Amino acid sequence: MALTNTIYNSPVFQQACDQFDQAADILGMDQGLRERTKQPRRCLIVRLPVRMDDGRIETFEAYRVQHNISTGPAKGGIRFHHDVTLGEVAALAMWMSWKCSLVGLPFGGAKGGVVVNARDMSTGELERLSRRYIQEIATFIGPNLDIPAPDVGTNEQVMAWMMDTYSNHVGHYDPGVITGKPVALGGSLGRREATGEGVAWFTKAYLTDLGIKPADTTVIIQGFGNVGSEAALALDAWGAKIIGISDFTGAIHNSKGINVRDALAYAAANKSLDGYKGGDALTNEQLLEQPCTVLAPCALERVITEQNAPKLKCRLIAEGANGPTTYEADRIIEQRGDIELIPDVLCNSGGVIVSYFEWLQNQSAYYWSKEEVFEKLHKMLAKAKASVDETKKKFNCSRRTSALVLGIARVAEAKAKRGLFP
Ligand code: GLU
Image 1 (tube, rainbow, N blue to C red):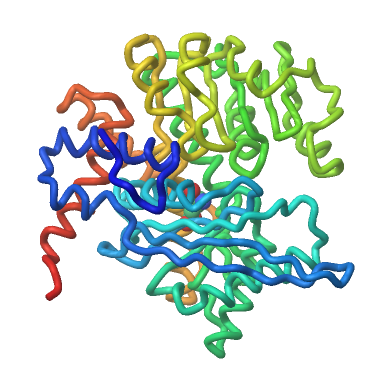
Image 2 (cartoon, rainbow, N blue to C red):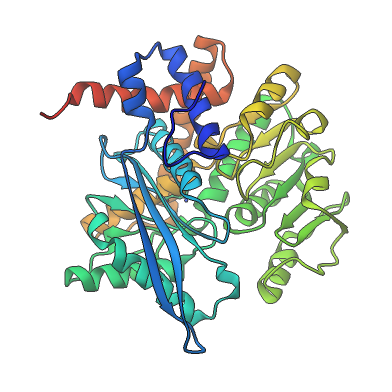
């Protein structure tokens, strides 16, 4: 479908729009409601002046896109990446809307991005950048307005600085403004593991449906950040063999199995997997095409493309990342018919679910045990899986489209029922 000209124009925004249109067609959504539901509601673009350690002032472009605020406060992470664009942030915000809606969270969808290579910054520079970003968007966010969280390139420490900056802005401790905080500052037990734990939970559930046992499962994880490493640990603990991992420096492959804890310790000590000797060195592109039971892209968008989709040698794709499969690659995977796909909005929803638990705990100032968090998480994942599988049967469509149909329908219904003001 042709894209109407918007400020968000980009291949990844187009991908999110194409996915939306496919689901909206199934729902028979009329043009007015379709555009109202699809297009981002509003965005803020800011420029952040930051004093660098050598005394220079550098400025960084940054965004916050609120895609949907009709079903609750907007919710979604903040990405620090040198290539991040407004269109990408808008697509990620759109996927947050469908994800929150699909799993039944009382949130809309949002995403933030700062164009920066955070790896090259000192801790002090990173702190000043993080604080300045929140200072610039302080009136646009809040526990009842828009609740950020970590994403690619940000972590618990960054969330702590951001929460502190916002709390100073409003004049009191206000932890519910942001999730993914350290536990000492109102973070939830289990939030750090939540996204990877959810990816592993869905992977195990779908492998069980396919009759594949842990001992017969080999796993390739592209991206060894928070999501990929936690998914690797959980699948390793289940008895699967992790045969491939990668980060921005390249990939490691070992058909005998990679010692995940050892690789994690190496990555923590060396700031990357570069030089890790636990297997053969490959490129990220080569890694995706290696034979395996489970391929889990856990890094950035658009890595499974029409070029490599015909060459994939896996049984299951578990999308830990947001948007890792292009619209064209989806069509190829559907036609092949030999690969099951757990779509991003379902597969990585564990992160935002435990973010919701964190926000609830902050609002009530009453904190839960890790067991309680995981028990509630698993219940919500199981419910979402059952409804996606049922919708897939009902409409005879792909698992991605069925997840999107569910996520989009609730947002569209809320908008239609709220009506227009005035
Ligand atoms: N950035 C994560 C995601 O893409 C988490 C968002 C959140 O916890 O709000 O789902």
